[in-house]
Length: 71
Image 1 (cartoon, rainbow, N blue to C red):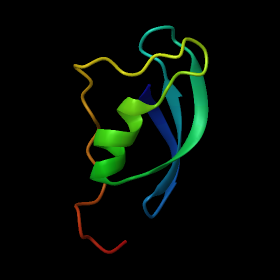
Image 2: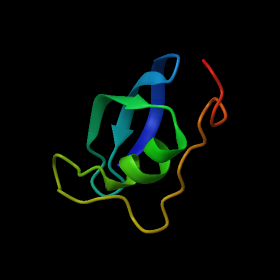
Image 3: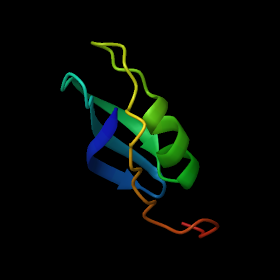
Image 4: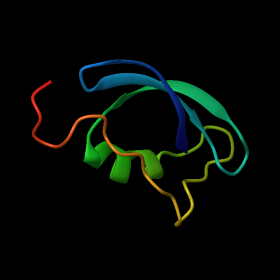
């Protein structure tokens, strides 16, 4: 899965639309805007329809705020 768009964000918590790169399945879910979430959690999300994860060439988004920044 990958983030299609972020609907709203408060500090580092956000609500986004995720889309599967394989079958196009979309879901609305929560997320956390830090480097770990974008690099490790999002690419390991399993699609609810086809059961696949992001491909190896997945490129993560950058967090809105730098690491260690107090929001």
